[in-house]
Each structure stands twice: as structure tokens, then as C-alpha cells.
Length: 178
Image (tube, rainbow, N blue to C red; front, side, top):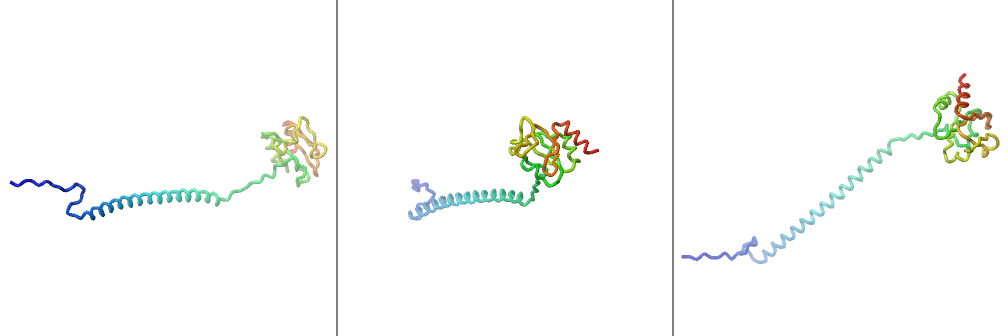
């Protein structure tokens, strides 16, 4: 009877018949392949990350450029004046409506048909110096004071009439319509 020979091959995936150098070469070749595979994967991840950053930046900048291309209209409101220049307007005769915070809708409507007129917001920081407990419409521009809602009639740079309170202002503006 023949004895069964024991298989002396090591279970490395390589046959014993191959030279040892080849096994080592193949082993190091496998290691190089796995390291180069890792390197390629890392490199691809970095490239994808940079591409995503570039794409986000491009989209963001294109939106900003679209906004820049749209013309914006700037509206300058020439009907608003400051206390310091309310007597220096071009028409010879005009009205200045001084108000705090909220304008009266009736007065606003009546002013649309009253000819040349300007508005003076007493709540603006530049105009607060002219707000006082009592009104004064005589003297220099520095001495002019407003107690509250007021309509001034100005002719040739001088205050000729002053109407205080909603009722007096409304009556005067309605008299202009007649």
C-alpha cells in the first residue's frame, strides 16, 4: 500500500515550485498595488473636493455677477429738505411741511395739488436741533424752532406765514384749492 504523502505546501497562495524571490516580488508587488491604489483613491478624493469648491465658487460668483448686471435705479427725493437749507430752495414761493414720524394722509393729499412744496422730517438727526417746546419762526435759520407739525409759507427765502397743527394746515391747504 502506498502511503499518502502529506502536502507540505504552505497556504500562501503561491506554489512551492516557484522560486522564493518571485514570491517576495509578488508579495511586494501586491503591497505596491494596494499602496498605489490607496494613493490613487486619496488623489481622486482631493481632486473631487477641489472641483466641488470650484463649482460652488463659480455658482456663487455668477449669482453676484447677475445682480451686478441688473441696473438699479436710484431715486433721489428732492422733496425732502433739512432745516439748514429749507430757506434756500429755487422757487420764489413754496411750502415746507414739517412733521414728526407720521405724516398726516389728508395733508399729504392736499400738498399734491398745492404747488411747489417740500417736506421736513423733524425726527431726522440733522433736524432735531430745530425741535423745541415752543415754536419760533423769526430770526436766523439757527433760531427757527418747531413744536410739532407745521406748514411754512416761504417767499424769497423768508418765512411769511406759519400754520401749526393738523386743523390749521388742512384749512390753509383747502383754501388754496378754491
